[in-house]
Image (tube, rainbow, N blue to C red):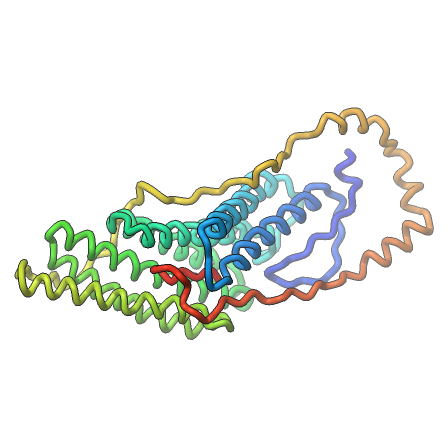
Length: 334
């Protein structure tokens, strides 16, 4: 009963709807708090990742923040959405497609950190190829999920997903090429590296559409394209001198399943949704029969009128540096 007496004012981030709406439902208040927490965690990760020089401790914090952001959005979608009464507008914060896109993007960006780490430590190329392929798939799912949202609201978001999907398709083919060369399948290694260069071209075109404003996307490609070209050159040289294998006419879609490094949603440590025992003692003290009298007071009406003025907080843009990151992957989270 008490939850229906709390007046909440939801606001839609994607739609940028500043229309004041009120609803007597404590679930909206909880969703609003958690939504802000999820957005803050993702922005916190982007802020740390915007530095040109990232240390290991910072990379771990970025990874945890992104998993926590995914965990918060996943909790809203799985546990709170069904408790919300009324119609949910398409493209609003509570649109399941929007929530799923937030979850997928947060997890995909967390996996970017893992891929960068695996590249730094020169892990098995087959492991990296599978994880890069899975990351590309997550960005593609995010893009397809946004198709149900009005295009004008998510044009740049969708362009970002297309750009990142192309980049990690390219990385997947580069490392798959290396793994095939290691297994003495040089013909497949060559065609996979050629496919990587095709995705590099797609990434360049997508970067022009995305245009983050900081140029970070071009920093990403600046490492990726030469790496793909070196991979191809190496495979072609080895084939000409040693293997003499026939190069397949086309490269089938990679069907790789990663065994390691897959990120999963995780709620922030210490975040609990169980009812505190002190509330059980406090509940009898609330007299709901006095609510109408309280609402009719002049001071309440004055405060309500003032609260209707929604004040916007100017957000400071987070720009990635235009220097190459101090890692082999050139990984940039923007």
